[in-house]
Length: 92
Image 1: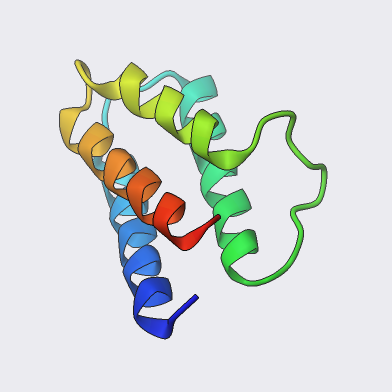
Image 2: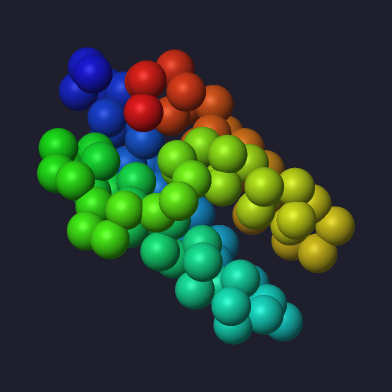
């Protein structure tokens, strides 16, 4: 992965974290799920392997969360879909 691709992914991850912090009225379980998914992706970007591997790969989980947030948190959903696209292009 090129450094510009990695930098773009990290920028998107930071945007997701920022939107997650500002999102009000989100179920605790959903917030925890998204936070754990972001950690998994960050570990993959770092070249490591996530401990306690999840049942699903990151992209389908991320897409499912983006769809879930479309009505209640549209800005977060849009950022998640951008992240899905960038991760897919990077082969993650």
